[in-house]
Amino acid sequence: MAKGYWVAHGDVADLEAYKKYVAANAKPFKDFGAHFLVRGGQSQCVEGSSRARHVVLEFPSYQAALDCWHSADYQAAIKLRLPPVAQLDLVIVEGYDGVQP
Image (cartoon, rainbow, N blue to C red; front, side, top):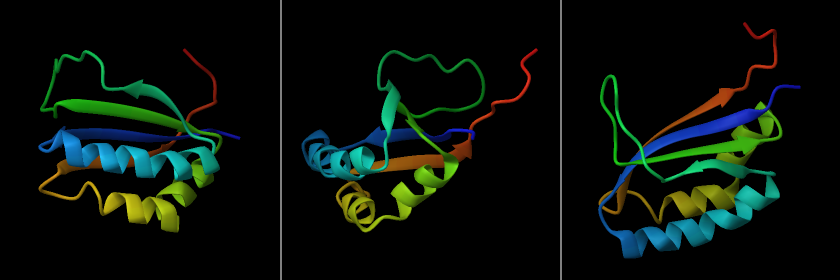
């Protein structure tokens, strides 16, 4: 079964308020088996446009990734980061476990 991923790009305007969102999202991330592959760190936009912060979360399955986002706990966490705290672009994507080049 292919894993699921959250790929997020965001801009944080209020770091102190954003920390409340980070604390609140820990429970649903743990409940749905998520772990961070990318969490901030250095980045360089080499094509197109970008935001300041990048996060990639891996879940055991695509369904777990979707279920986490739709969970009551995560929906409550989202309210803590809505603008003006942060702006986020988030895509939930199914991983690929087929033949590699």
